[in-house]
Image (cartoon, rainbow over all chains, first blue to last red; front, side, top):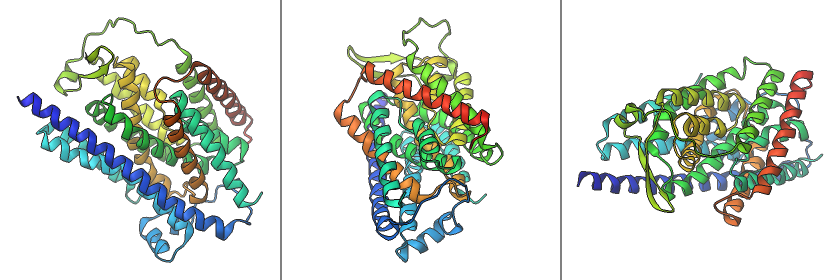
Length: 127
Length: 278
């Protein structure tokens, strides 16, 4: 009986994770596309040069300043926001899994998933 | 070359890479860095940044489909993600410490290895290793939908698989690729998980692994939106098309074509690395 219930929640978790991933990717692609169209309209005649690594300006490195750029319709900020949404998608999947494993009363996996989430958050923090 | 033409060309090439990667099941991410580096003369850091982004996109997109089909083992994935994410953060740190020619050489070697992994025979050998009690305790043994109905499997050598996954994460963070071939090595070869479960679970893990290094990539300025935009949209659209055209088994001819392309890119990367022309 308990096994049956676990299977049910496992499948339910699969479906929600699948939906979450799909939504994140589509949302991200749409934001990147909007930014991309603005970017190409604005700068189409410039000559790109990526030969030498200079690093992105600080306004494109952190979420706070990216959001500021988005509010002022800066095309590169829009694209960067889309990329952030994309990176956040698997992170959201992991965060949701904690909830899923908790519902299944699987304490070991709640802990393991918390470890993965902590590593992800550590990676996203300022270094 | 104007920005418009540059962007469109990169989009078309990325679409091709995503399409081929999806049709062959090898993933398109691996060819993005060499393509940007060798054809478009993009610096290796920007190339790795754009590639890492495309890897997250395709992994999440494909995982959405795989998870539903029931091949993905979420417990194995979650357990091994502890290793891959830790490795990925270390790998992302290493990017700034290792010279670009050395990165190109490592890249070439990983490409060679991936080509080898894809041509080697996939016959299943009877296992000489006993099922790992740790896998039972962690409830990682599972079943998957085979033609004959649900088939159960048990897992072996969990610590070895964990170790290889740490290394796979490191390579992913260092090179901006999914390093699916290394993850499959850990699961299919070391832990003897059925091949379909290995590939689906590996794909599931790739997005999280890449997301672990993405924060550091952003902060170090490796991710240029103008470059990542056509790469991400191209690879995503290409792999989506691939999944629509031919879901399921990849054709042998396409696989050989892709392997040859990977071999050529591998030698080009090695050559660039050894001559220091980067």
